[in-house]
Image (cartoon, rainbow, N blue to C red; front, top):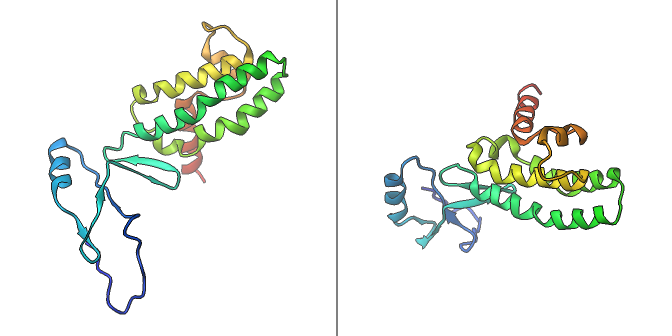
Length: 171
């Protein structure tokens, strides 16, 4: 519980505060959410199951499904755009440049955190990334994915996660 003393002239917006708690079991989560949380002059605080902090959605179970869905929703828009640009006979270099400008930053930002989850949760994002690479390289649906990554000088998501973690550790 937070207390702000009388001499403090800080003002906190009551409409932007939310309560969010991490828990491991469903029983403890439901018990915590049922409790009334009062803070700062008895204003009731909205209880949420996830929140956005520094551009990353953190959920109460740390499954990162909300953030993965957010990335998926952002990236899926570019499949049609890249398909139309490919049909306009844009060169491979330009298509790769567009990929690295608009798609890759969404995947890369925070991958050290959100990719540390079950592979099943990352499956939709991995499949979407594979599909985008197939569109860029004009490859058939049944093409081998590792060849796609090699042609674009990229790493698959699970290897990219490991690579970014190693860079973070050995800085």
